[in-house]
Length: 121
Image 1: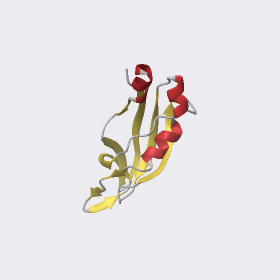
Image 2 (image 1 turned 45 degrees about the vertical axis):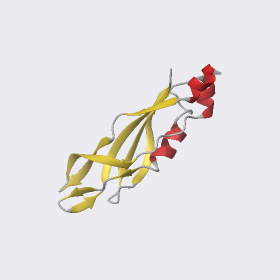
Image 3 (image 1 turned 90 degrees about the vertical axis):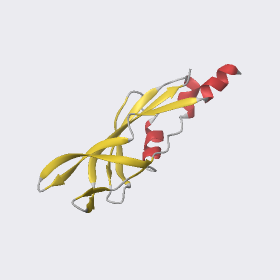
Image 4 (image 1 turned 30 degrees about the vertical axis):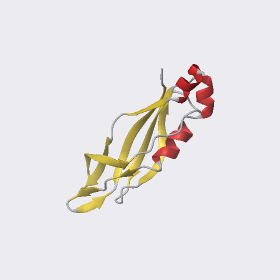
C-alpha cells in the first residue's frame, strides 16, 4: 500500500515561469521574456505511471497579443508516445501576460517550455 501511495504522489517540474521567445521589430528579431499567469500542470499518463516511466517533453508555441497559447507542438521528448498528449493538453490551457512593445501588445514567437514527468520517491 505504501508503494502505491508513493507512486500516486507525483512531482512535475517546469524549467521556469518566465519563458523566452522572440518578436520581430522593423525586420529584426528581438529576444523577449513572457510570464505565465496560469500554468496548470499536466496529468501523469496512466500507462507511464503503471510502468514507472519518467521523462520530459519540450513544447514550442507562440503567445498571442491576448496572452493565449497559439499553435503548440512537441520539439523533443525522451519517451515518444507517452507524455506528448498530456503536455500539449496542459499547455493549451496556459495563459501569459500580454507582451507589450512600444505600448502595443504583440505576438511572441518561438516560446519553449519543458515539462518533466517525475515520480516521487
